[in-house]
Amino acid sequence: MERVDDQDQVLAVVDRGEAIRRGWLHRVATTVCRDQQGRVLIYRRPGNLSRFPGHHEVMFGGAVGVGESYEQAAARELAEELGVHVPVRFLFKFLCRGAVSPYWLGVHEAVITSEVTPDPEEVAWHAWLTGAELREAVRQWRFIPDGQEAFARYLTHRHEPPRTGS
Image 1 (cartoon, rainbow, N blue to C red):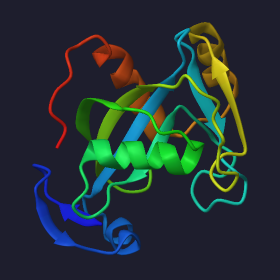
Image 2 (image 1 turned 60 degrees about the vertical axis):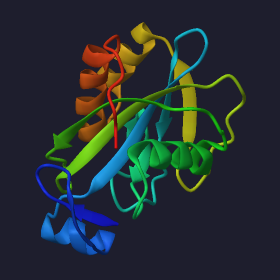
Image 3 (image 1 turned 180 degrees about the vertical axis):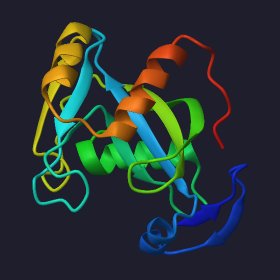
Image 4 (image 1 turned 90 degrees about the vertical axis):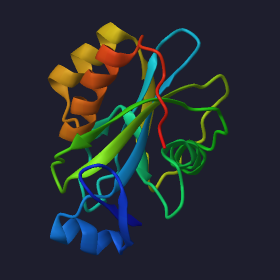
């Protein structure tokens, strides 16, 4: 992965584990998935994962690879985690302080019109929720704090014109 500075400029190629241990900034791409009715896809992480086991999340994503744009990483992650190949729309990025380590987070949106086939190593359970159902779920279930911060920003920025993400 690429270690970046506070302006999101590449400094070096580093190991992800080392970047997290040392608190080095790196890049993560994430996507809010909606269906044609506007519902949001949420999921629960498997209980055997090292970070946030059993937590729920509204964002699908992961580390941006070396030489990869935020958009490319977001689309790749959707293919890997959900088995779907759909266009992603870059919305914004921000410096996320993170519950585990700090990173630049590129937030995207995608509309999924086909069935999803989640990777069981990443997704233990999933469902499409309306806004009201999601608000209730957030009150009752454990969600990853970084995803909740990004989703709150997503709701604020949702109707703004897209910006360049790379």
